[in-house]
Length: 329
Image 1 (spheres, one colour):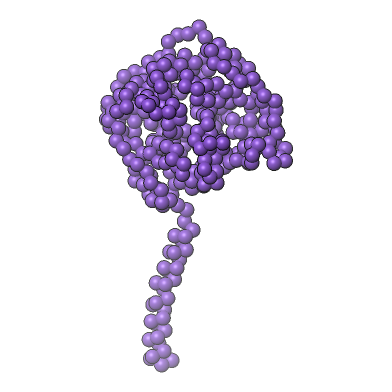
Image 2: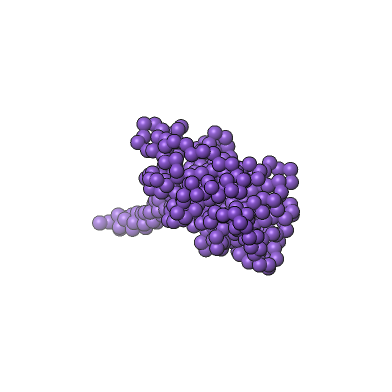
């Protein structure tokens, strides 16, 4: 081997090593999963209402939920605790806006601004950070909009709508519901939120990519099968049903009840003066499927502003079985 060949061999080896390292790094970057903002709970739902105190009294009377009031720039906001919390329902004054669904809240374990911002950047999505003044300390809140402008608030799983860094503290005790002679519905959790989209596939992709929501089940509706994306896949189950409905926006939300009994829930609703649609017949799914839905798995009512509220078993997943609790996957 000549000295020239020897030098050329060393040079080629020196150049090949960095290139091989670069190629391996590029392949790793292409295959590494992007970070997500993975929720553990459907932490809360928010609504615009024409009369905050009237609707808060309705929730207290029907469900026995304790309430807190806080002062926001738009007026007093009622926060009603679900079960032992921290999950809740928030009522905002409409102030001329159309009454109805305002936003949904995801609860993330170990939530941090840095991790959320990394995930948003990785998916080329935007989020708006805002600071809410509160007794006990200001709260940093993150709002994200989906492709159809539906508002999603993302907080720590301990968030309860109050003050301090995580929004979990209140300076005043919760106000219990007044005693009542009427029976009440004991709600376990928000079971799901159903909403229409301009693109069902686009909405599904957004929630699966950014939030890492797994496929929990399928809903074989009259049009075509729709994906049920799980937030909490164990009891109490919680999920979203994106891209369902004839119009863009939330058509209804659902409250989960342990040991659900349609007739018993219907009697309670009727006792509180809420009109209950009659139970329909068992209906088959679409597209030649063998899926059959049981009419006894759900019941609907309406809040004081006419917004639709559904009730199901706390393990409901739009599946099969007497209560729709056997997921179709």
